Image (cartoon, rainbow, N blue to C red; front, top):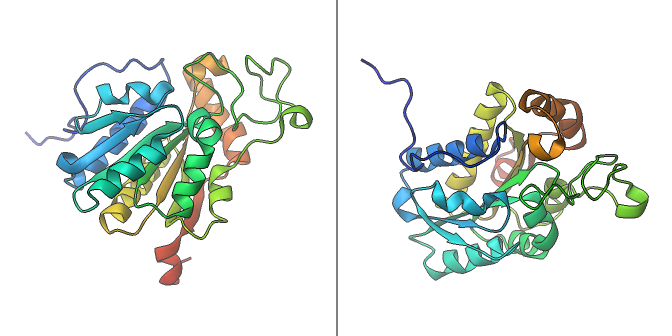
Length: 253
């Protein structure tokens, strides 16, 4: 009988701890599928910092390192530079980690065009620590620390990471995707695979921002959270490629 579905070898066969409806599990699978298809599991090293992503080392078969909060790009830089020909290095970071305490590491790794792959999960809230307002929380969004909704006059506007990094000369590839339906899941996988392939080809810094859901801290059902991505998140954070230097050189964009 033909096999039509199989678990990626790079993903350990254990139950995930994430809340029902959380899309971390989908993204984990996509990362693992890309590692398998590129045949790089034996040389891949993942960096998981603080946040909901901190338990990623329980799920990936490749070597994993835990970094201090926000410092994953710095750790990834050290690991990659220590043996650039034999290491494929990726970070897996949430928005509170990457766009807040780790913003300096993110910007400078991108500016240096470090040859690493960054998987950035943007669910517009601090998930693990209780649902506080994050740098990416939307204007008017209710969180534990903005019970009346985020007020830009008091808290500033959300940080659009892809748009900001696209102004730097360094980054090779920046794309924003989501995983709230089958079509978008397939596009997300294509982007993640390209980000890994760029590293294999020594092209430099690649970041894939994945618009994700957090039903628990958004106070929604899983299905309503997926709809909220379409109705609220995507209009504020448009999907698409924000920088692709290789495509620009070839005149494709």
